[in-house]
Length: 204
Image (cartoon, rainbow, N blue to C red; front, side, top):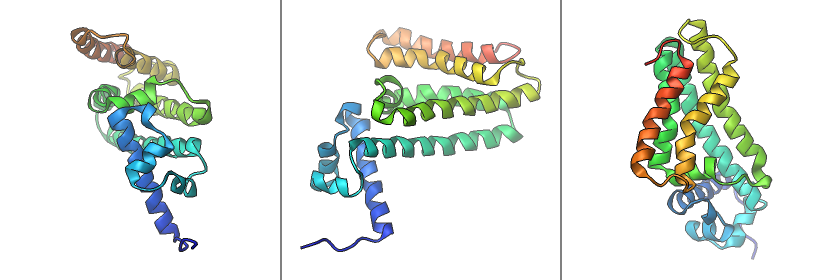
């Protein structure tokens, strides 16, 4: 017996349920848990049902990464809004410190976005994820340049350099290459200071 036809709202709601299940799996078990069967089990449906909503695993992963990217984009927009009428230094510090926060509170999500090798099937989505972070920082840096608190130069290059500085300890730690927890904590603090001093005219 064929299934009753679903409304666009029902389809959208089910897609969100599936993506929520994907997020739960990645958060709890890491990127390797993101399989069609595991997600279907989390949702409580047959794995074949998922193909009604996504063409394949690559499409599901792309939608998952895209949704995470949109949520981060909304948070970045709020930081920019505050920076435009407030303290650019604080906005920069908050943005740069957010990577440490994610690495600590949601290490598996951080690993999914920053550590695991890029899957060619959703390479473009991951490229845009990094580019979005860089553009956000470059915007804040440009605001700082206009207000005279950041040395002039190429905002895109400065943003990329700052991203590399603050993310290095987390990538090393979550890839298993930096296992000394004390050193990791020290580097986390030190790299944030280094990145801010690199950007600002006067060190803090």
